[in-house]
Length: 389
Image (tube, rainbow, N blue to C red; front, side):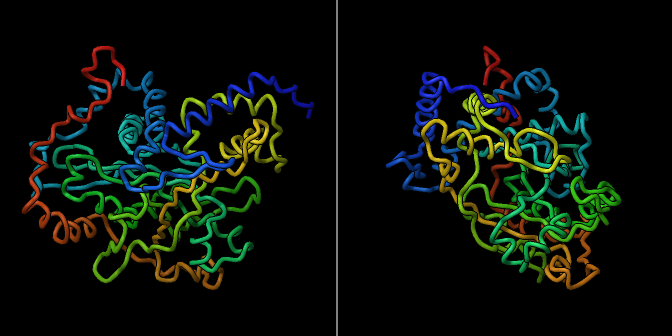
């Protein structure tokens, strides 16, 4: 590879200043060459940390979605359109370039943290109320990160085991309910549906028989476990989430607090352009293609050239890690001790009936916020004089 062009001092100084200013504006503290999260890591302050990145994603999505917003809002229920006694959830797999994909993208813009597009393999679902054809929530599954200490220690993985069997794990990169169904605790319902047979079958149908890019081994299509991390510290949805005697979500620890969300705003484009000009991608196998591995590598390589520590990738905002075993012997299978999975079998109907009696109806007996909700309250651009967010 040719040598990178010399760094323009003014260009580097301006980008460095912009990064530091952006981090401080988000609420981070810059002390002695390190970045620290706010002293008070409340859920409200965590939302503020993510606000800049969320606003940037909304801005980027505007061109493709603003004209479609009135149509997309037709799939969102107002409270008066929901009849709790007749709710009938159904999972719909999202196909690329479909109307369902547009609705999935639009719904994800309302999350309080920026929602990625997922990595590598992807399965996405809309959860629809068949009674009124309105959206209850969304599920997005993608490839898990290769190394995640709490997950790997809970399984008991060796490096070799992880290389061979990570293909049987997926990560939920977005998961939850939207208003007005969220007032009925349907976030728990959507979380429970991740453990349904529907997800396992969709995974097998889509990935069974495919071959990995590097090892060229055929995938048997068995999904053994799903992982996820809480968006805002400790999770009130996943903790102690049970279906009968079965604990669906198991808390296995916390992340170290690393990533690149704090650079996922208007500055990331400038960081990426700078890295393309002045940084060399880490060598990797040819089958992976050329260029940088991911956004994290771009940020880590750019920062030292600006006189900043590559450790600024560690933002200190820890997230609780949860695992959802889909079989009684998930750990044994992932360690290579068992060759067959002893599945739990859960239909969408079984899950909903348990959820309805355990959580939804008791909540409805005293929480009436559902009925005052209007879909117009969810609009991002509609009704704004300049069409902006």
